[in-house]
Image (cartoon, rainbow, N blue to C red; front, side, top):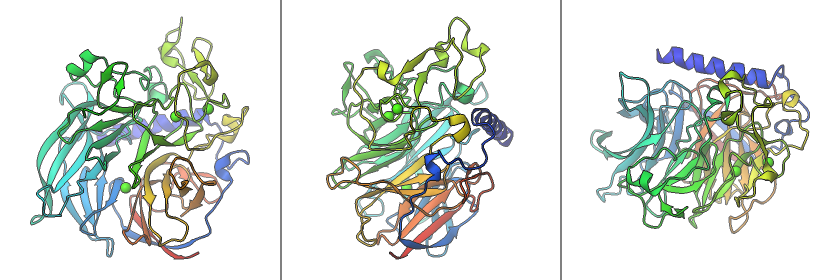
Length: 469
Ligand SMILES: [Ca+2]
Ligand SMILES: [Ca+2]
Ligand SMILES: [Ca+2]
C-alpha cells in the first residue's frame, strides 16, 4: 500500500513537472545550473555504506560513528565510517509515510550525549497519522529518546511536541540543537499552491492568534522555522509577532530543509525555491522571509505569486495546474506589489533574468536539502564556508561567508559532481572527510547537464577525502 501510494505520488509529480517543463531532457545553455563553477581541490571518493532507506539526516556523533535517520525505513542507524558497519539504534514504530517528503526526518543529538552527564538524549522528528484507521491526518512529532550505551539502542521515548501540521509535500523537517539549548525545527509550506496541492492556500505568512496558542492549535506553523524549549514549551524570549509569542522564530518560508549554526550563534537555513531562487538565508528572530509573495529577491524577474487557491469566479478545482502560466481566474501579485519588509537571501540558486523561458530552459534550481558549516583549517581556504547539498544537480556547493558571517564572499563553487541526489552531509572533526547521504530514487542531473533518473549511488553514504589543492 505504501509503495503504491509512493509510486502514484511520484508519477503525479513527474507528470506535472513534465507538463511544466515540457520536452527538456537535454541541457539548455540559458539555464544557470548548466554553467559550472567547479572548485579546484581534489578529493577521493569512497562508498561507506549501502542499502540505506533514504538516509535523510547524517551527523557525526561523539562516538565517532555517523548517526543516520533512514527516512523511509524508519530507523536510526549508526554507521562506522571506517568500515561501513551498521548498527540499528532504533526501529521506530508508528511512522506514517506515503510520499518522498514524509517519514523519519530530522535528528538532533544533545551536546551532552555520551559525556556522562545523564543527558544522553537524541531528538527525532517524524510524521505520523493522528487517527490511524480513519482518514489520514498527518502531523509532525518531535520526540526525545535516551541512548543506552550498554545496548546501543534508543530507549525511553518522551514526546516533546506533537500536532505540528504536516502533509505529503514540502515537509521541511530539519531538527537542530542550538547553542542556546533550544530545539530548532523547520516546517515547509506543505506544498500548497503547487502540483497536487495547488488548491490549498499557502500559509507561510499566517501567524497564530493568542487563542490558538492557548488551545495548542499549531495549524499556522507552515512555512516557519520554530524555536522550542527542550520540554516542548514556548521560550520566553521568542519573538512577539502581531502581539503573540509562539514557537515561531521566523516566517515566510517555502521549504527549508537545511539549518546550521556558526560559532557566533548565527543561524543559516537553505530552502527550496519554486522554478528558480533556491535560497540561503541568515535567520533573524521575528523576521519575514518573503514567501509566497517573493522568491529570492524582490526583483519581479521570473516569479510572481499565482494564488490558485483564490481562483474566482471559477473555483480552483475546475482549473488544471500549470507551474508556469496560470489562467485568468487565478489572481497574480507581482513581487513589487507587496510592500511588507522582508529579509532577502544571502545567495540564490539561481536568480534568472526577466523573460527567462522556464518551459524551454527548465527550472533553475538545485533543490538544496541538508547544509553544514565547514570550520576546519584542513582544507585551505574553506573555513567559514556553508556546504549545501544539491539534490537536483548532483553536486555539493560551497558558499564562502564573509568574516562576520552576514554576507557571502564570491560565487558558490561546485564539488563532487555525480548523478546522485545528495540529501545531507556531515564533516569529520579533523575536516579531511566530508560524508554525503543520497536518496535511493528520484531525478537529478547527469555529467552533461541532462536529466537522469538512474542514480549512480542510490541510498548510500559517500565519503569524500581531501587530497590536494
Ligand atoms: Ca547533517
Ligand atoms: Ca525568501
Ligand atoms: Ca524574485
